[in-house]
Image (cartoon, rainbow, N blue to C red; front, side, top):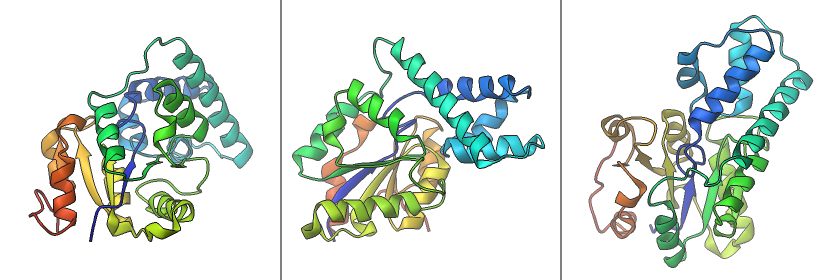
Length: 241
């Protein structure tokens, strides 16, 4: 077995924007005459799509949620997100991101984004970071009906990579996922992938318990070492039963 593709989460791995998402979710609740509870964002929303997050937040408050109503809220949040990013001169990406992507591309490994964020947000940020051409596949939250920890997004990414490169004959076990949340790690593992847990949203020791590899920073990820393990030449640094 060889490492054939690397799949990135988006929020909390590529862009450091979780505080902004929390702010916008709480603002939506206020606009809907509902009271936000700050602790709920990490409990309910971290690592999950806006659709799943808002559905549960509204259900907890007794709101009947129609598809039209929910889509309207998501669109309002997306517009506010774009407006906020337009005011930021430099997108807050994570240290080591550009170098890691360069090393992955140098190894001729295809890259994908698998995220609960909507496509317009992902594309906006990747263009601002000048990384749009690095990712051949994007699976976004507005393209699937499920949210992490469901593995559907990761499995769809494998299908799309195979459509682009049929000779790759990619299987989930050939992929490495890079995640920062428990929901994301569960999704990738349920898809049959090995996972790097990067300590951007939770402490290193918590990532270490649930991921195959844990790193404090993206720059700490030793791609050569990972490739050796996939090839059966090394011992997995941190495995979970």
